[in-house]
Image (cartoon, rainbow, N blue to C red; front, side, top):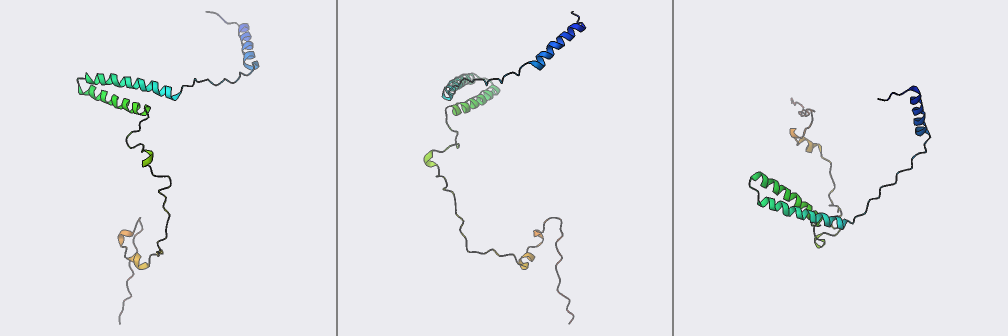
Length: 152
């Protein structure tokens, strides 16, 4: 095992400091060039692969003996069918309507028309008919006012 002396350590420290403090800044790394693959080419390749996997899983499903493997193969087929439908640009049921069935934009706007009825403020008589069910929170209902005692 080599032994470092003070001179060797000092010499290595000087070299390290020169590299650390006196080197020019490194240039900005160039962005990686990603080869452009047409989406159609990618989708076509993946579509072929998924369809091949569907055939393989269907063959495994035909030879399945127990219920657990049948369930697993059926779940895998369902996921593969979803991927295949997405890659082949088919909408799922309820996702898209044909153009002729769609309502034109702005067809659902409704203009507000005045009804000719003026809003009236509730009268005190209306408020007294509400009863105890109209009270909310922790405020107790007001006690009713009794008519003055007539001694005539």
